[in-house]
Image (cartoon, rainbow, N blue to C red; front, side, top):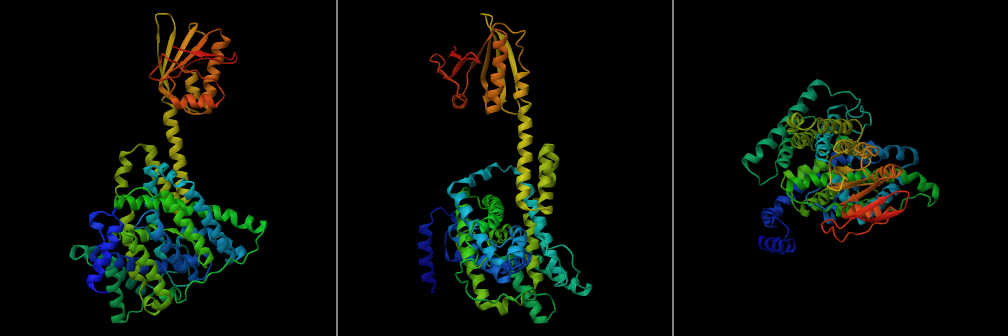
Length: 543
């Protein structure tokens, strides 16, 4: 294609995507950067896909096909340009027991159902709930994932065939003999050095790609005997063929695959949405969570029908892409197509790439992914947030990402609930008419209901007590029960309890609970104020 034709194509694409930032407009230079970034990602995808296929107990091509299909579909319709998806270890460790007990055909059926569940989550717009993940959980997630990526690379320094199948790739096995180990470490260090220094010289070629090219060229020129991609497995194959999973279509099959599908769908969406947020912070873009859910689900449904093991977003490869300059969908599409090219035609060349070069790239990803400022943050944030950061990091390494995020969110939510439970309080004063007013401050919910009741003195209060909720909020059924119990105490003592200044949402909550609420015409700021006589069934307007 001539330079003039390339410029015309870039202009047409540029006009079709006005959301791109100025530095991301599709000029010929930008397209070149995107393509080279995609090539770098594709090279890094190969050993990962093969390794995760081994973890799941399936043929390496099953992992490679998943990386190609999932990567292509999500690059085309995903919620965040720049993200890279493929076969991942977080999913592989769940798949291994399914494959061992029922075979690979059940895995394909599970992946299809997993995709359906993810599409449903996207259509229902459940992706928005990722905003409930607190920042300390994100820090722990990023740090834990960086450690997991680091541990996964350690398997490349061990004798092939001596490793146990573990999710992180660091368990068991014998280390390479000292001379081979030293040589491999030297090549890894050389790759990392090139990646570090290249941006200071030129950005025409992505630094990771230059590191891989230089080290691979050195190994081939000198004839060094080091582990290569071909030592993992042959990546040569044909086009993925359409294949309906050969499983019985009955209730027993659903009972087998549904639990795995639910777990895989949840893990895949959590990892994908957290990666989406992380890439969004780096590229300055927001939104797209529900679209990403639909894209992941569509990709996995297609993958299941084409002999792939399914996948989700990959934070390591996404970081490689973003730091290599990939900002548009071109890089993700290019990575998937390059990967397919490797499978169809490029296997003899790709299989000669030294693993040390790819390990060096991933080590630089680890350095760039780990939130090093979290060590300083731990000393400045509240103790509970610091514990959440450490807890999520440890659980991510010890178990998996999804469990770690869920644990972190639960602990953060409990801490938030406890903090708010201790904030309920009230100031009091007596009106000229002799009524006692309690001005409640703080949310009234399950955690503060007991403290709310302790604020009042039904035996010692006058005959008319007014509870002012102008600075409070009735949040849930426990709050309603607390109000009922309080009103019952005053009613039993022959005294009147009035509720004032309830907000609109509190009014709806009380009405939904079956209690008659009467709007007050002389309370225009809040519009809701009620005399509440429990057990007697008497309700009226308060002033």
